[in-house]
Amino acid sequence: MKSITELDCQYRPKWHYSAERNWLNDPNGLVYSNGTYHLFYQHNPHGAEWGNMSWGHATSTDLQHWEEQPVAIPCDDQEAIFSGSAVVDVQNTSGFGLGGVPPLVAIYTSAYSLTSPLAGRQAQSLAYSTDDGATWTKYAGNPVLDRASADFRDPKVFWHDGDAGSYWVMVAVEALNHEVVLYKSADLLSWEYLSTFGPANATGGVWECPDLFELPVDGDASNTRWVMVVNLSPGGIAGGSGGQYFIGTFDGVTFRSETTVTEGPQTDDSPMADYGWLDWGRDYYAAVSFSNVPDGRRLMIGWMNNWQYAAATPSDGWRSAMSLVREIKLVSRGGRPVLVQAAVDPFDNNGTELFALDQQPMAEGVTWLPAEACGDVLRIDAEFEPGAASRVGLVLRAGSGASGAPANGSGERTVLAYDCLTAELSLDRTESGNVGFHEAFPSVERVAVPLENGRLRLRIFLDRCSVEVFAQDGLATITDLVFPARSASAVGLLAEGDGGTLMSLAVVG
Ligand code: FRU
Image (cartoon, rainbow, N blue to C red; front, top):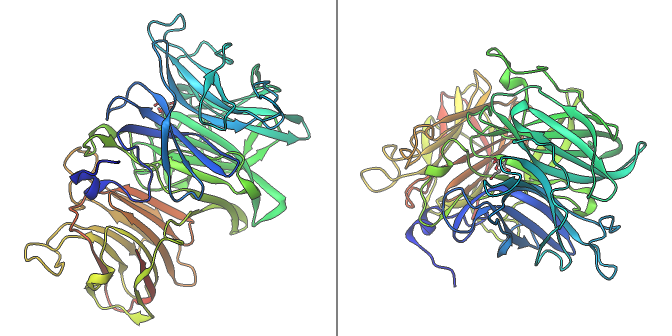
């Protein structure tokens, strides 16, 4: 029986995975096998702070509901188990399989402890499972790839079939050098150097948790591009941790970016907003994709936090959650491929429409929605035609203010607004509730979003301590933590200046 605490009711997300107890950070080893999605993650089994890094484990069959499993790969006195990936070794290239059943193989970073002969190094190691992820055995020949580096980590491995041959490819980082290094292997056990990518674009922090995958453009399998994901911390677009991506080609040896704006290390006048960002909020980090997902779908999860203040977020025994699962696609815009993201919608099958509005002119100021549209776990779909208005948007998680009801503007609030003059969408959490636990927490995130046919479409997920915004069908996303009072549940429509039109609104809970 799970224990439910006050802070659980207030902050623990309903749909975003969190460990029942203790700390988590990066998603690791995301893999689909035999009907089950596995989410491993950086976990401290013994406390609500970072430490004793081990791989926690959760499973799901629908990517909506997650069930916590026993710790999969615990740390020991020789090594911490840092981030990495997992594959289904279909052809049993590693030889770890038993009785014709393909093994699951985890490729993780051994962060060696002071007591280890390899103290101070980070190298890549294997663990395998012959019971579909339930139990794991470390490979006796670990590490399998050691560059005698102190910051070589976060291996993402995938099977590559191409003109250059068929083999496993690993992307990992030399974190301090802002480099993604690529290796290949026939058996996961021995690795051969291929190439290095970077530094490029954002280099204002260490490069961590890379990923590399191929996607069709506009669903056309004969026109594909490769996406290189590089998380970095600090130096993200919103401050602190963030994820950037490059779009380009990969010939089995070298990734060539077509979206590099700045070669080499970043300078003071680097055009940060021109780089590709996975998310424009503060709380989407270490995002990587699942392997082996049916139908070629590319699904990612990020850690919904930021190293700037992750250790200080309110906790009563558990700390941090994952983002919703996101499906990633490439679509053509202005003659070039861009990345779009859609959440695997937890309200699909599980939600009911609480409230809806049809097309209507927007009144100036804040128009509060009725009680049935309030909540701390909601999906809100809204379409606006700003017209002559200077700002339109939504007030979210609004408190009722001193007078008790209805929300009157004096209480806490999180404001999502589109500024027509700057064509920017912003999420302001400076008055979102408990913001005082860290000086870096109160913030306003911004992203340039072009109107499409004069309109702005927003899909917003509220889940107790989080706000995730998908604008223009996922062309831009903003993910931010918020820590409001439980009662701060009002939703308002915001308009500054006359002439805005609400095209439609639906609230699902
Ligand atoms: C990213 C990261 C990784 C590392 C892990 C340690 O958040 O720093 O580079 O493997 O966390 O927990």
